[in-house]
Image (spheres, rainbow, N blue to C red):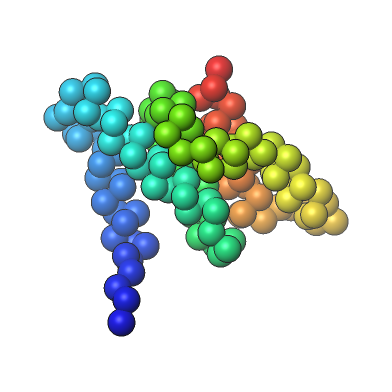
Length: 126
C-alpha cells in the first residue's frame, strides 16, 4: 500500500514555514530558499487533474508569492514545466472565466483562486 501525504498536514507545515517567527529565526537567504522550495512544491500541484487540489495549490502559491515575491523567478528557472505553466496562466484564467460567464457576477471559488494567483504572479514579476 502506497502512503501519501495528508493535505492537512502539508498545509499546516507550510503555514509554519511561512510564519513570521520562522522568518525571524532564519537568515534572508535561508528563508527565501525555503519559500522557493515551497513555491515549487505547491506549483507542481497546479498541474494536478483534481480541480479542488488545484484550487488549494493556487491559494497557497498566492500566499507564498504575497509574502516572498522573489521566490518565483528562481523556481521558474529551475523547473521548465512550471515556467511553461505560468507563461500560459493568463490564458488559462481567461478561458476558465469565459467558461463560467453564464453565472456572472458569481464565480466559483476555483476561478477566484486562479484570479488571485494570476494577480500574485503579475506582482511578483514586476
